Image (cartoon, rainbow, N blue to C red; front, side):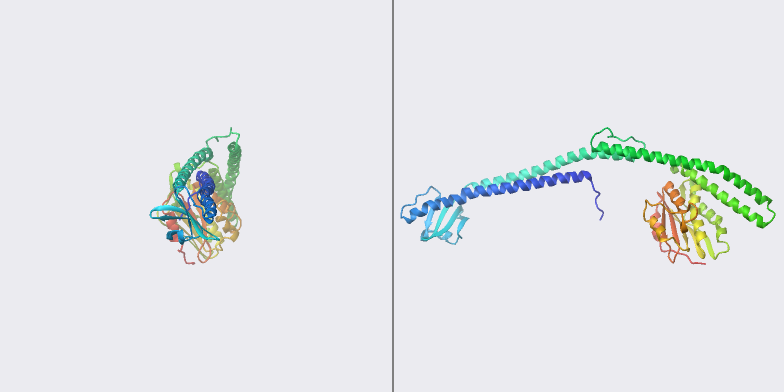
Length: 428
């Protein structure tokens, strides 16, 4: 059962209603005390005053003449219907007539003062009915006032939140002198600082990448000449290593240049991740040559995404290369499922400190140790963020690592991961 989201407007209305309830309870207590006090004065004290006046006269043998509706009885003269009543004031009904009866006892014996029930009971009922109507009106008024106040308080905040969510919009309310104006101006300063920092980072990345392309091109050209002029395998191997390293660095520079631009992946032509996965597997097959490791690509359903092919290849290739470098025996498997690409190995796995970063979305993925070489997983994570994808990690059954790149907007990605969670492969 999902919890309803918290709402500031709902809480303001609830506060007004709570205030209305508390005030109504207070007034109800005061009204009840007042009504009961009036009843004691009109009924109980009146009967007591009549008894105080009639008792001496009855003891002296004088006639007790009372106004209409009042009766005084002593001893055997007390009607049978009243003899069982307890001492004090009681309200009873005899033959359909309501009576207020005071039963007492003195040295001469028991006595009773009887009075016809007054209209005060009806007045009391009317008073309580009016109070109930006032309570309902108070609640309706509190709810209405709460809704109006909530709208007046929440509407500027909602407007400010919408403006913050829209990067191109200017922030409103900055001219206000109240707390909302202070908040709007603080958000404006913070947003301006963030945009400036982002722009500086983007320009720095672009400038550095441009500056690196020229020396890398020179190194690659010189390495090609050395390879062509090498007279023996011993002299050719270092030149080939220089060329491969320079080529990989040039690819990294191209990736950084792409990441420095504004993402417009939705307008790009779709690329086949099936073809990219097969190429990257073949590209890094030399890394497992001479090791008891089987590297293979298990093809799956056709998977295409709108993204630069270089970024997709770098993301998949980094995972494949890291798996090949850190797996000494067993297998490295690249597989495709609906909506995702999976790279699994039988290596030592990630250290616990590195695994913890995948459980915190705001954490930066490290690029040291078994997390990868060079830019490592940090670059893969940044590419996934650029493409709107997600990089997930889980320890593979029997040891090793299982990385999954989940592309947003592609159907059945979650179902595929669940169905694939228990699958594994046999080391060879």
